[in-house]
Length: 93
Image 1 (spheres, one colour):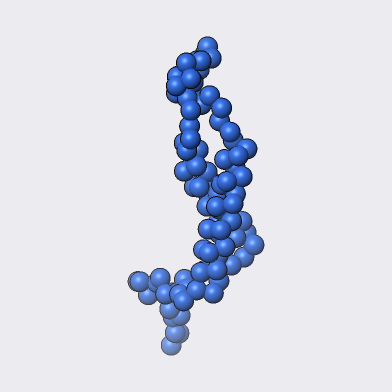
Image 2 (cartoon, rainbow, N blue to C red):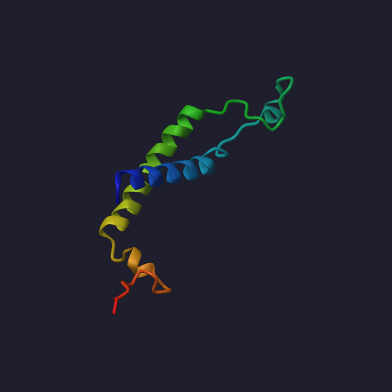
């Protein structure tokens, strides 16, 4: 796995986990009864983005380590996923 592939993999995992973590423990302005003018009542009262970003980073690192280990040392590779035989070398006559 190249460095660029590792960074892209981590970024994708981080954002996927972040979108899962965002709605956890969400308290809306409508729940609190304090709706700021110009916002929806479903807007978060306190988004706690720093805490959610830290949780996301921790979970993403663990997932990334597991997935990266499978990609680098796993029991299968990209050639094992070649179901149509497009990666087999063509022999010239």
